[in-house]
Structures are given as C-alpha cells and as structure tokens.
Amino acid sequence: MRSWSAPDIVPLPGTGGPLRIHDTATGRIETTTPGPTARMYACGITPYDAAHLGHAFTYLTFDLVNRVWRDAGHDVNYVQNTTDIDDPLLERAEATGVDWRDLAHREIDVFRQDMAALSIIPPTSYVGVVESVDLISELAVRIRDTGAAYDVDGDLYFSVAEADSFGEIGHLDREEMLDLFGQRGGDPQRVGKKDPLDWLLWKAERPGEPAWESPLGRGRPGWHIECSAIALDRLGPGFDINGGGNDLVFPHHEMGAAESRCVTGGPNARHHLHVGMVGLNGEKMSKSLGNLVFVSRLREEGVDPAVIRLAMLSHHYRAAWEWTDAELPTATERAERWRAAFALGAGPDATPVLAAVRAALAEDLDSPAALEAVDTWATAALTEGGADTGAPALARTTVRTLLGVEL
Ligand code: 5CA
Ligand code: ZN
Image (cartoon, rainbow, N blue to C red; front, side, top):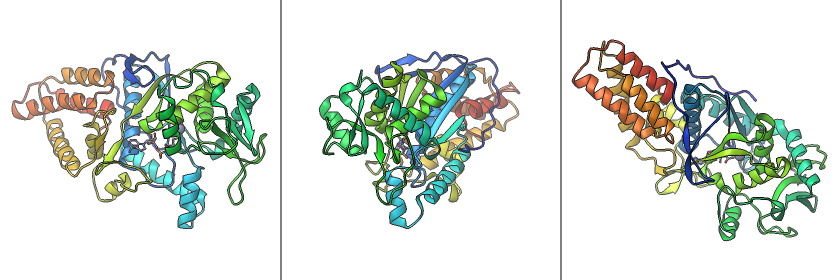
C-alpha cells in the first residue's frame, strides 16, 4: 500500500548514542542493540474514522525511535499495518451507508495527509490486511499444522493452552486477561471454545460480509494474526521493537506474540514499547466513545502542524495525559520563541543543545527534557545574545532532525 511523503532529514554533526527504551515485558529501561538495519513494527489504524491526537501521539513516539536510531547510524526498516477489514469498519460502513472499501480508502488517505503534515517518517512498508490475506491465511495454516489451533463451527481458534510463555509481555493474571479480552474485541462467551481466552485466527464467511478464498475455506482473518503475519513476513523473527498504544498490550500483542512463537519457537520482538493513552475530559480518547480531537480538523482550522507536534512532544510518551485548551497556546508561544531565536544572526554555542537533545531522547525518549534544553538555549540567545554565528542554524537543525519540528 502507498505510504506518505518523507520529511527532509538533515544530518547532524557526529552521531547519537544507543537508544534505551522502557520494555513492557521486562518493566525496565533496556538498551536496544539493532544491527545495521534496525527493525520495528507499529500497529496502525483501523480506518473507520479520522486519526485523533491519541493516534498521532503513538506514531510520533515511533517516529522519535526512528530518528534516534538514524542519528545513531542505523537504517530503519519500519513496518506499519492498517486494519482495512475488521468488524468496526464494517459496522461504521453499514451505519453510514458507504461501501467499507471506500470508507477505508478515504480515512487512510486523511491519515497519510495527517502523518505527512506532522513530519512523521513514513514506514518502509505500509501494509493493508486486504492485500495480505494470503500471507495471513498461510500463517493460520502453519499454526493449525502445529496442533495449536482447532475448529469451532468452521472458525479457527488458537488454543491458549498451547501457547508457550503466554503472559510474557503483559504479565497479567487470568482474571485481568479475561476482563480485557472481553472489552477489547475478544469473544470469551463464544460457545464451543475449549477456553474462554482462545482467540480467533480465521473467521469463516458470514452472509453479507466480505470473504476471501483460502486454504482454510472462504473467510477473513482474525485481528491479532494480521500483525503477527505482516511483521514476520516483512521483518522476520526477533525484530528490535514491536509496539503501539498501551491499550494493545493485552490481548493484541500477547496473542500476536504467541502466534509468532508457535511457528518460530522464539520471541517475535526483542523489545515491546507501549505509548500512554491520550485523553479528553477524563476519558481515553477513543473512536467508540466519540470524544475526539482530530488532527485533520486542527489542520483545517489553520493550526500549524509543527505546533501540534510541539504540544505532543511536551508529554512523555509513557505518561497518560489529557488534551486541554491550554496545549495549543503554550506550544504556539514556544514555537514563536524558538523561531525568533533561530532567526538571530548569532547566539550562544549550540553544541551542548545538540548533545542534550540527543541524550534526552536516547534515554527513553524524554522529549519534555529535550524541549527544555532547547528552551534554555533559545532564552539565552534572545536575552543574552552570543557570538557563535553558526549556533542558530545548528539549534534549528537539531530541532528539525531529532524532534521533527519544522520551524
Ligand atoms: N488497527 C489496530 C491495531 S492492529 C488499532 O488498534 N487501531 S486503532 O485505530 O484503534 O489505533 C491505532 C493506534 O493508535 C494503536 O497503536 C493504538 O494503540 C493507538 N491509540 C488508540 N487510541 C489511543 C489514544 N487515546 N492515545 C494513544 N494511542 C492510542
Ligand atoms: Zn496490530
């Protein structure tokens, strides 16, 4: 599937250090150790509605990972899916009287524009489920052939009893798993399953619903297997980082990891990165709750995407936070201050700013600390001045290349 246009990445002097990130599976900050090409997968949108600030915050986080790795000298193979066939998409299409394909194409297109406007580096491979049905059904067959899956009235289920190391990412107890499984797209009540936690790999064709031919019969993929199949196909086993928002820790990433482990015998990824939820008025911003601030709406209202990006960067990726009316004025003021400092003919040496931004991002993507380092330099440049004529340009390039803020 077509991705979106890439922002300009201007190289910086020197190289950054290794990226350390909080790994959900270990609960600790771990040092990533990619090869020459770092490999990362992030769960993409289900395109039944426009992207909101929560989605943007998640993709901004993976964009920072991408930038830090590149600055450390790696190429990055970044894969993102889009769930262009799933129940919520079909429900919305039905409710609004549009074809589900048209709905998906329209929303994916808005998403691409949002991502490009926010200077998010596009994935190397942007992969839809519809175009991947064959490789997903192939993985389902491989899983079935190991004996880990079984049939319930034509649908294929993964048997949780056969999942080695189940719980390795979220470390939840069974009660919590059952609760979250029911809330997040699972079917604990389905009659005929061996265990309420067993999950759907392949859903046989239902009347009036789209279906594809496969060795498992006509039908469509379950949710988790789309990501495990696409990641295995494009990245291979044991890639560097898998992740998404922290609403995906369970069941999505736990069940996806179990699928992958079932056929490879090892972990799908070396590290698991999860982003805190962005809320509005005390609730998680979510399509089903309808409490959304759309990136596309803000853009239509004329908000500078660099300001939206700055507002998000002022929050650490792991913390849950709320979008409020104060976000945009604060970020606008900061953008103006920085712009004024970058426009000066000279300023204080900016080498320490580059070092501080590099260090802050490499240590678990501490973007608030990175912004503070730039604030300190900009304030000094504007109030005390400085003699270094290269400093404003170096500070600006630091901000553009590492933080992706185009000022
Ligand atoms: N298509 C699936 C993943 S395979 C999905 O979860 N789609 S989504 O549209 O619901 O979410 C897209 C991405 O944004 C996911 O990584 C999800 O974890 C993240 N996300 C959703 N809501 C929020 C939020 N309020 N704050 C932060 N991230 C969010
Ligand atoms: Zn996913």
